[in-house]
Image (tube, one colour):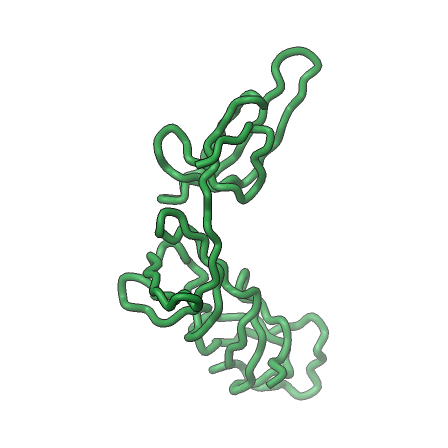
Length: 190
């Protein structure tokens, strides 16, 4: 652990509070009133269960910043209880709880490179690539004369997620999808 003053805390930092739990910083804002003590308000989310909290400190108060190790891993498989990743440097395997990945788990693909934040040999967050290539399994047929303006049609992707695609895209086409929100980006180049 490293002690830092509250005014130096930034979004994305991981703090350990007095309760011994880890919190990821969502926002940190310092206030400097004309009279009185300057304060820093920190909005955080508890990593273990996702509960949000807000703490207010004097700007010179010290808080404990957790040392997080970000490492690159390759996704191997789903063992039922967790997802298994492998460190490319030493080939060690890391089991990541399903609730750490959350809704983005549907975008995991074999041999996908991910960045995992590790604290005390425990994964606390997984960052997937921004885009993945998926195949359209099912969609409405192309309607002749329909323009490709802003009209989109629903499509079922190979990972089971529904997305909206342009009218000219048909079933069997491979497309690039944004992992943050499942939106269509473009046709795959391959």
